[in-house]
Image (cartoon, rainbow, N blue to C red; front, side):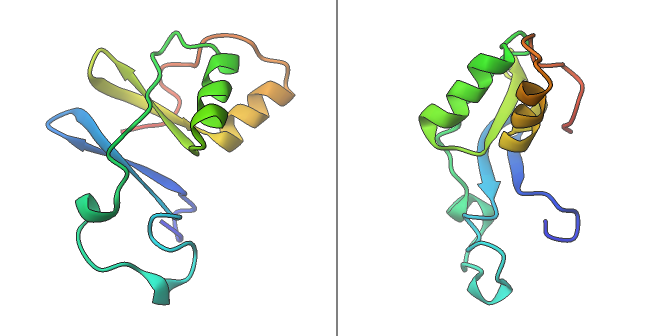
Length: 107
């Protein structure tokens, strides 16, 4: 995650979102503090998701209201991308108020 400069990973099983793993879940940026166990042991399994037509404002409020840093974007039950807090801050700073783009980042 560090070498790829990725702060969050969306965990999927058979195409369905089952969790989010963040640097925070792994003890931050220090390697010596890595927790023991599997991804499933340390990921957050209660995942807040957005639909492709969710507005930037609503997505930002979901992140803020749930104190999370990553918002998987799903179409039905299929992951089609994800947005994090820095993505949304950039869009808000640009004055964008439109649905989240469907194919920006993701699997």
